[in-house]
Length: 433
Image (tube, rainbow, N blue to C red; front, side):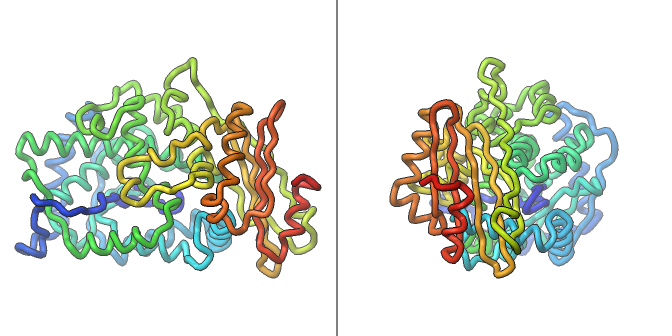
């Protein structure tokens, strides 16, 4: 289950590599049986009691489940995104991403999201209807079992902490939404990891997994075409989430150790508020280092820009977003499969809070203003220095003004604009250079 731009679950599979001990693909051996309602119900009857034992939480009511075609899933996904954003909201998000240099100007974000969904989905849990769905045609076997373990843990969590309102409360702040998803996906991924290890030792699963070669190929193609900023938001909650719930463990830790139940209770009921708290768990778990984000007021300046201008998007970058701006080298898709190490950079550390607004006029020209506050003068200085590096500036062709203040206020103001309105965009910061 993914919220926000995806609003659904895609189980992100590791990028495959050459392996001398490779298990043959399903299509290289025999065609495996697929699911109908009876086989799905039987498999759930196996997996749910094991999850209850692993987590220690009792199932409060039966979990609904069904079989769905990929076409039905894509229709559901389209409806969910339309309800979440609508055409204008999606267009505003795309405008912001292009201005910030996070999305190529010629890339269709909605089309890319749909392709990635269609290539990757095996099953998902819908918290609005409290129902788990497996895709018709998806083969029975170890991969299906692991997807079910992940999704059914969502269902068990939903009975304890209603997920739909929990995620809905983060709407309008992508950074806070990312942090919430790290808890939700972290819980389910932790359960799946522990299930996988025990399944190997107890003989529930063979010591290898069969997966369709066509599915791997389509996933790799879709991931290769997706921008790193999008992949980071998609993949990292599955990797960083379990580590956060262990108060800062490693990927290996999450396969061997379960989060403390009291930590899960706290994380779900007092959600982390930023990607900073996910990247630096001590800023959430340690009372002496607690560092919630500051609320940044950024007034709507449409009227100052003149007739025909409207604000089409407003959001928060967070530490991860600032790292995507300031990193001299962005991590690859494969590197993201191993966590956010490439985004824990000094130039984005010390983030205190931010907000941006994107404007568009009747001719389609765009202006974006971002304001970031930092914890210390040194933090502001590191970000300012990073923004001057050629590799960073090359990724941001629309950046027209960058103003950094330090002292009583440690703040960065960035203005991005189409060339035709670059001079007008500068007026957002007055005469400052």
